Image (tube, rainbow, N blue to C red; front, side, top):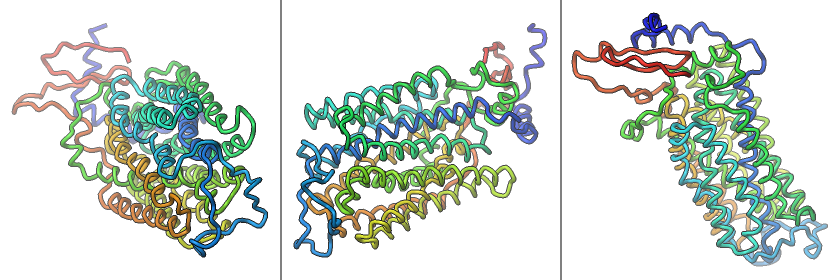
Length: 525
């Protein structure tokens, strides 16, 4: 058995050359549905549940909180929208609940999730690299689901306890994006990332659509007490999803018991240069890398506008456009339906352009960010001029949020482009910084609109978002790269004349570096 060990050993240079040659000749598997597609579907549903538990509060808080008194007359004459002709404040669905929270408190409640979320992004990326993304991602969703189910009890007890619980929800959910980014780097070849990564991350928009739409109906009903039902239902769905995830997901193609040999061979030859063990973080190289900072800025800019609308859109539609609870939920979900549909169509188009070599990977990343961030920037500026035209407001919001779906083929793939080995850590770094808008934006919006639900106050909110969009995306376009960075696969430094015996052992798609004086050992895949 060991007599043929020489057949398994090649020099490192030969192995790298073999990878290049394989990349040029291995076609996509002919099967229409493979193990990587199952993983993408599970990831899609996982992010749908994750975002359901994140955004349900945005609608529920309208039903939970006592409404601020409306002054539709003099103080802001011409700066507030008139109520609809059939609006009856005594019978309106917007009567609200029993919690006497002012604008600042509501901003803190809505933003508290992101205080915990910011803490665990980097830890989630490293944990995925050490213990595997399946466990990290699955436990992140499961624990968030259990906390969500407890939300109504904590809210009834006290606002500080509810805020604390939301911080813990953010803490457990913060690991999900970095863990999935690392997992996709193992499962999805570069030329399929625009399509399959977009499918996975688009689950967030699908979950947002369903949640915002359904939450309005649930809050207006007597089902499970009204607003508490949005926490019980979506938390319960998260628990059910977790069971399916732990039964069907696998960390790496070699570990999947049902993957076809053709698909395994295809994935490993395009993702096979990824180490099976985590590498030591080259912090200096990462923090001085302009492409990394470009990914950080792209993520930060996109999230500011996204979180502004995600947390505050129902409040805007209720207080400015005066939609009732049912129509508020439906209309709040429409922009994210456009986002989801656009991201699916757009990612398939980008996939075709990559496969047919009409565009390079870098061109796809830049074009996607131009559409996905400059487009919403223009939409935010347009929102300053829609005034009380509710139909025009919805059209602009649908176009702005819809075009943002292009980012899943843009900066959201850059982490995997720059460093497949450290994709989870890079997502953790960029998402940590990009989480700042999650709690800053609701606080800023709350401060600007507390007792001042006027068109001019909301214009300020939209202008701030558009300026941040422009600055951050311009930085991304100038400095981003689609090349794997040199620090992706650091090798030990050797003295002159040493290292000639460095070899790679390939066994069923794994690799192990040894020296000519090392004892050759093999490990199962």
